[in-house]
Structures are given as structure tokens and as C-alpha cells.
Length: 283
Image (cartoon, rainbow, N blue to C red; front, side, top):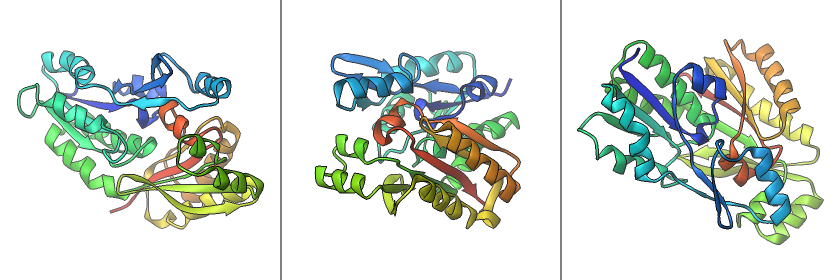
């Protein structure tokens, strides 16, 4: 067994079987409807989340794991002699990173290393998989953290949001913008830049046009793509994800194009049928 355990949180959106097979420690964020709080991906599924939003007409609140959550998760591996590298949801989007740093301070110096992914969803997952491979190769926690930090600015994260409804319910666009956007079939495209969700551009018209633009943007970097792994990550858009996967396999020569389901936290901010292409560029 490797001497370094890799941890992530539930927003990394890695496939469940990968979490299991690679022995990744996973710490859930929280989703709250009224007085009921659920652990992302543990107590509530994405389908259940959408059903609750439809029922109540409002979005849930999301919250970071507490420092005590991290301490509880890290302690067994520390006691068994393993060092830990935890790769967090962007510090620009959540207090998850800060709470993990507080928790790390409760362990002997150097035993827990916290790395800010400055990303979300499988933009984190790509960094986690680089860390997993390095841990399997016997790299130290320090070397793994440095590797992740070198990969971090090379991660490309771009999503098409199918509807403005969730942005409106979450207070990120006005009622008028929502109405006009719906009438004109405007689909915003979000990129992660410097750790923040940033509106990149808007596509007007059919969904197919937006997906074509998403693919075109990714293929523009085809020669610079790291060929190890590309993710197509979606929320309740399996058919579109399979088609994007097929086209990326045909046109990039990547060793693996994987489909991943967005979890409850990501879905609660973006809504159903959100879909993205995520990859690492060569340095």
C-alpha cells in the first residue's frame, strides 16, 4: 500500500467506482432544504435533489464540511502511518479549503497537506487522478502537492448550462434575464478562471448548437491536450455525454475519455442537463 493517501471532497465528481478502486478518501459537502441537511451523494441523490427543488420551488443551501469532519476523516489514515494530500474545491467558491487547513493544523506538521484545486467538479477530479498516480508511484506528499500545483493552471473547465432557471433561483441572474433568456433560448457557457465560475459567452438557439460550440472549443486545443484523460461531466444528460465522448474519442486520440455525473452540490448551482468538457493542457 502507498504511504500517501489522496483525499478529495464530493464536488470532485469522480465516478464512484474510481473512488473505490483507487482508494480515494471522499469527504461530502452538505445540502440543506429547510431544516433537513443531507450529505452530498450519501444521503441524497441528484434525482432526489431535483425532485425536491421542483416540489419546493427553491434551491437548497450548500455548506462545506466542518474542521471536525476533516479531522474525523483523516485520523484513521494518520494513525496507520500514512501521510495525506487533500485536494479541495476552489477556495474562491467555498470555505471547504479553509476548514481543511484548520483541520490539518491539528495533526503533526507535514502529515496533512491541503492543496487548493482552484476548480470544481472533474476539474478537481483531473488533479486528484494525477495525485493518485503519483502516490502509486511512491512519490512523497510534498512531491504530490507540487505536482498538483503545477497541473492546476493547466486544467480547462467549460460547461454549458441548459437553462437560466437555477441561476435565477440562486440569485445569479435577474427575473428579466431569465425571462428573456428562456424566450430566446439563450444558454450560458461557464468557464473556471482563477478559481471562479466566470460567464464566458452565450449560445442562442438549439441545444445542439451549444454542444457543438463546446466541442469546437475543446478541439481547438487538441494538439495541446494531455492525452491521459478527458472528462465529459453532466447532470442528467447521459445521451449527450455519450455522444460527446464518442466524438472526443474519434478526434483527440486520448487514451481515455470518461463520463462523469455531477453531484448534488454542482447540480444545485447549475441545473439539469448541464454538461461540460474538462481536460488538462500540456505544459
